Image 1 (cartoon, rainbow, N blue to C red):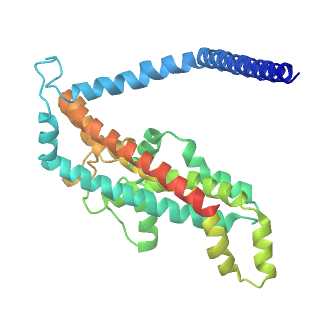
Image 2: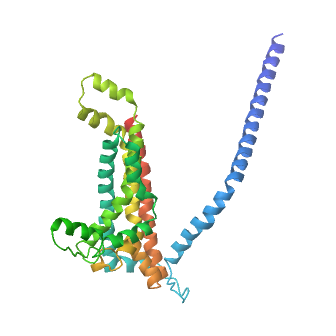
Image 3: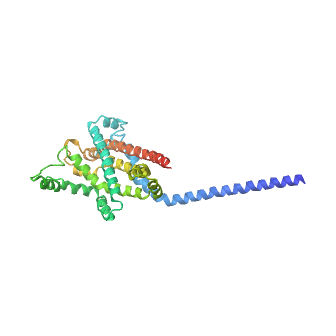
Length: 320
């Protein structure tokens, strides 16, 4: 009797193992089927990204290690010669310095002004109208913005006429033709176009903050300043981080405004890394050298993106 019971228990255990094996096999088959179905749906996007993004990037990296020149083709492999030439090039130092200024300006001014506008416009009359007007420059192409403001800053443009009205005499300043005014003038144009997007992102972040902590803090007697510093600002950190990273990337890759508005290029004040790359690759025909500049810009952008992911993870953990 005991032997029969033991045999029945073994059979039940064997059947249980077989059933679990079948379940696991079915799950693996389902996972494989889902993978190939998802891959089939993603294949057009993968093909497009590979063809028009990844392949040019890889080819650009390959060119940076050659001596490829316009109309001459590939002469020979150069190893790291282009990068050595880039590091020792005086124009690269100027471009790196100017780009650093642009990155700093693209972080500070749009963030401060956009944050102030976002806080000020919440709940005021005609809020949507003001937000639409401030965001409107963002829908224009940077090339169009550069052309418009090129004439605004002209010697007989709107800015000088406006200053002449208040100065009581004729003001004739070549804003884009003087080394001490060209950078602030283009930065002002950049801020005018980008501050609307920063404002909208911060408004979205403010609207996502839950009201319960704010109401609890006010009931406990916290002042508006304490509520802002200790509750609103920490909860707004993820949004501010995204805005900061986007501003950094915009500062490193800005080209349109600098190329159009800084055509005179007084004392190389408008020579950024992107402009330097375009000048070397398409103006001088040094495609390999221009590719090395593009690789450096790409490495910086990837580093910033990695830093964003790291900081975002830490901020999320801190808030939680």
